[in-house]
Length: 218
Image 1 (cartoon, rainbow, N blue to C red):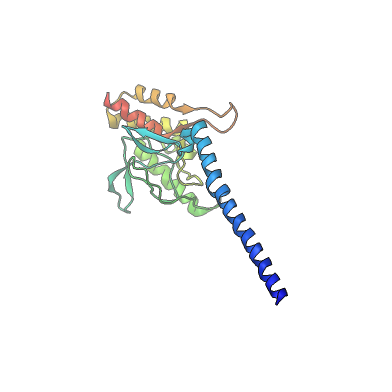
Image 2: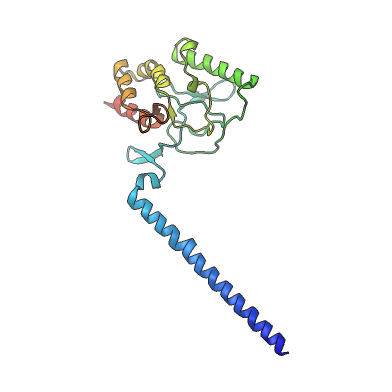
């Protein structure tokens, strides 16, 4: 009986110690640590901590890190939304359509996972090149690579300056703006390489389209 009582007391002590450790770690790791990290992030870099939000007309319209599509209410013969000629268009997405116009709603993300030598991928690239050339009224040879290849995420927020320049004529005409003003807008929203040598020059499509809307209102 003495041995049993001793075992019970020992088990109770171990259970009590485990419970105290659980409570202490829950408070430390589940409450104090997240609050401290959140507080530091909000104080040091609130814009990034809040998802790099982009605001326009007094409301959040998206994130500078997540691409959006700009489409009309009409659809083509295959049921796909038609691109809006009044906006700069992003890279194609193998993940499907996530957004309509400037709505901020992400449903899916991902790449096609097709190999570089895939005949399916080659067919998609050829189809996209023909569609983009016709949409922008330029020769197919003028279409840059990022305009016909989907990104790994499917929601790449940036395009190359070459693809942005390709769209200037179409966007200017659709908005009734001088071509030179729209070209200058692209130049103003072109970011160079990080630290002067990392990555490639790029244009954020969401920020460019917001600036375009403001220019069209003048």
